[in-house]
Image 1: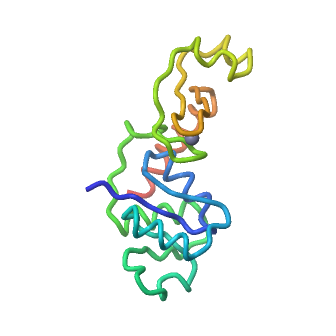
Image 2 (image 1 turned 90 degrees about the horizontal axis):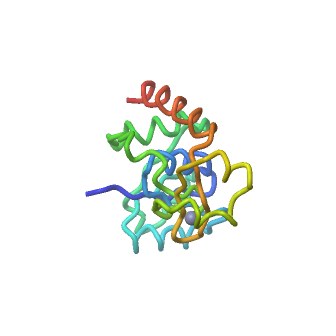
Length: 156
Ligand SMILES: [Zn+2]
């Protein structure tokens, strides 16, 4: 079974890293505890939290306590505690805004959605079917991939 996550609102950066790595991760700024618990139960998501209140609330059976305040250390905690398998082919397959699964799109279709320079210099685009955000493999992705390799090396 594929694990799915929901992060409390103190774990925005961790949520971002998990999404970059392709893990299904729900995150919302200022998400109230009761809504977080509701979503976790309804969607069968593991709660990742630094909030000491949450594990005390009844029904919160599926959670992982995060101790570190450093996002990469947090990622390490999640990966190690849940024995997550890191699959590089899943990197950059999720929308960082809304967690949607990105889809390949034709270049022409994104012409009015990206800067002219980007359109001119990039060939491969993906789009989020949920929020319509367009992504492309710019230099930042190259840098991030390198960083991810380093991180993966450190945490597994
Ligand atoms: Zn999206």
